[in-house]
View 1: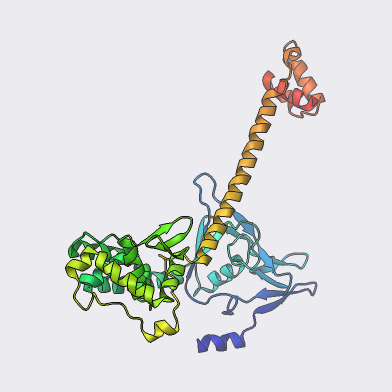
View 2: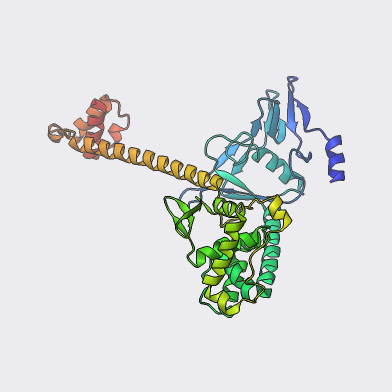
Length: 384
């Protein structure tokens, strides 16, 4: 990092090139780390692929109107003294190695074009997107490490701890044996390690477990109109996060939920030790900071608002599509209702007469066309 910083301090973000007329071009410097990455593999690919028609964009340079910097690869100077830039053609997919100076030059230009998603000059709907192989590889490595840790934790769980984790993962463990529970929990840890670890590492996992256990045995129910309620009488909140916060703010209710959910659970009756049947207790950190970390299983108000916003956008999009469809259908109906042109008068004419008439109406190729139907249609169209 220090070496990169020193290099950035020495290099300029652009180099100056002057044409024969004395005009100066500021050409973006692809060797500057702030202008272009100096290592890694980057792939640019089409956002929408089709076997029939592939996206294709051709350009030579991109100009930043504010800084006056030109993103392009100068080749030579033409007879008028202006710089000629390399022509770049984007097709379905291209790969660039940032260790290669020529690839860096290409990516410096492409990454600033308006058709590329994430470009500072992006306009309208982008046609291409960037795929950073370094970022993808890091994500794969991170996911693999998470999966190994999650599976290891799941394999070491037994008895009541295994039951509680299964409940937290949304499984139905009440009447299953330990072998089935373990296989189910390991499967979840393998398929969704991030969600598994988010629940496992949550500082309030013991409270979340009480909430989910009470749901599993039917003491907490979800009502579409009122949200979660305890024993059909005590409202807890409209979503998981608010309900758990309500429970944490009421220690007496939390203890009651913990004890009654354990007593209601057949699994606890058969497998829990005397110590595991004792009432829950919060630690100092939980008392001082009774917040609930959101995980993929919990819907917070912000998440709900975001989902509602997306739903509204989809509804609006559907409405627009329906409006367009109705207009198209109405237009089609109008066309069908419109009186059809009378072609009878043209049937009496010879092909040569039709050619002459079509030519006089502006159909330049009329004299070479012998198809009477084509000539008639051209005459009718041009008479309109």
